[in-house]
Image (cartoon, rainbow, N blue to C red; front, top):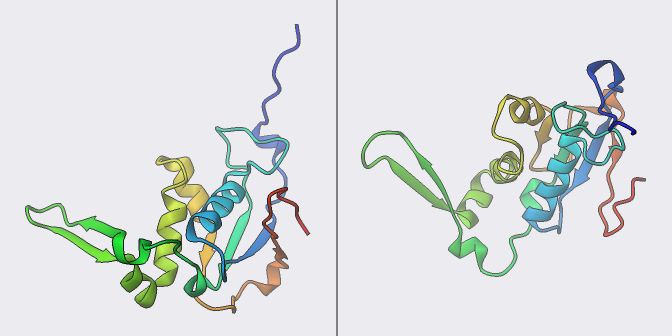
Length: 151
C-alpha cells in the first residue's frame, strides 16, 4: 500500500512574486486568483497545513469592476463592539475612497481564518494605481484565463 505524500517544512521552495493587473476584471475573480496564489494551490506540492503560497501584488485596484448593481446594493459592514456600533458603507463609495481596502478584504475573506491565513495575508500587497515599490523582487505577471496559465 502506497502512502500519501505530504510536503514538510524542508520541502519548501523559495517564494516567487506575482503581479495581478486588476483593471477591467471583476472583484471576485481577482480576489479568488490572489487567494489561490497566496495559498499555494497552483503548485503541485500543495499541502493544506503549510504556507506554500507566493507573494502577490495586485495593481490597479481602483479599476476593478463590480458586476450588476453590486456597487449600489452591496455594503461593507464593520462593528465597533459596542451597542449600536454597526457602521456600513456602500461598495461604490468604498471603491471611490479606498479601492485597495475593498480588494484586500475580498482576498482576506477567501483565506483561512486562523494564524495560517494571517501569515498568507502578509504576502499580499494591493495598490490603487499601476506603480509598486517591489521591482527588486523581479515579479512576473500572472495572466488569468480559464486554463490558468503562467507567462
